[in-house]
Image (cartoon, rainbow, N blue to C red):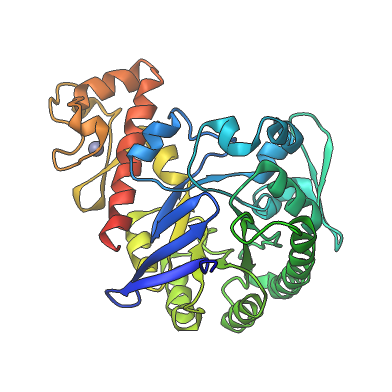
Length: 359
Ligand SMILES: [Zn+2]
C-alpha cells in the first residue's frame, strides 16, 4: 500500500505536532526547516555541511534556475540532485514569489506573468503550466503551485481579492498540468504538489482561500503572502486565526519564516515546515544567534580578542571545532569567504535545533 504523503505522530504544546512527510526522495521528520539554495546551492556550503546542521530538505528557486542554467540543462545533467550533490528531498518554489519581489519588472495577465530579466533584458514568461513543467524538469520532490502574490497595501483590497481568485484559477490549471505530466508515474515516483492559500491580512479572504486549497487534490497546504512586510502582531493574529482551520491530514507549510521567535510561534499554531534565507544571509553579514535568540555581529571590534566560540552551548561544527570569535572576526574583516560559511553552519544549526525540539 502506498504511504499517505503525511502522517501525524504526536501532538505537543498548543497546536504543535510532529509527523513524517513521505517524499519520493525519502522520509522527512516534521516539523522541519528548509535552508534556501537559490541557484541550487546554499551559499558557501557543501551539501554534506548543510546536512550536518540537521537540514533534511533544501529549497531551490524555480525562477532563478530557469534563467541560469535553465531546466533543460539541469534535466540533461540528471536533475537537481545529481546536479547539486544534495541527495535528500528538494522543494522548488513556483516562481510566483518573484512576481511579488520583482514587482517593478512584471506584467500579470490571466495567462501568466511576464518578467524582464534585469541582467539580459530578455522578457521571460511563466504561466501555471510552465511553472509545473519547469519544476518537473528540475526534478524537485515537492513542487509548488504557481500563485499570484500581493503586497500589503491596504488600499489594494480589490487587488487582494483579484489575486486570491486568480490564485485559485491558476491552482486548477496547475493540478491539470501536473496530472498530465505525471501520468504513468506510480505514486512513489511522483513528486508532491502543494497548493498555496493567499488573502493578505483579510481574514475572510484567507479563510476562503484556505478552504479552496484544502478542497483541491494537493498533497500539502502552503500559506503564502505572510512574512512579507506586515508587523509581527499582524502576522501572529493571522496565524492564530488560521490554526484551527487547517486540514490535519495534510502538511502545513508557512513560507518565508526563519526568525527564531516567529518559528516557535508558528510551530505552536499547527505549522509543520518553513523556509527562509535569513539564517544564512544574516550569517554572511556576521550576524549570528546565541542563547535566548540574542544576536551578535562577529565583525564587531568588541570580538577582536574574544577567545570564546560563538556559543559555548552550541553543538554545530563551527563551535565544536573551537573557532574563536576573534578568529571569525578576523575572517570577516579580511573578507575571507570562510567567515560566511562558518557562521552559516552555526545559524542553520541554531534554527534546526528549534525545529528538533518540537519533534
Ligand atoms: Zn555553533
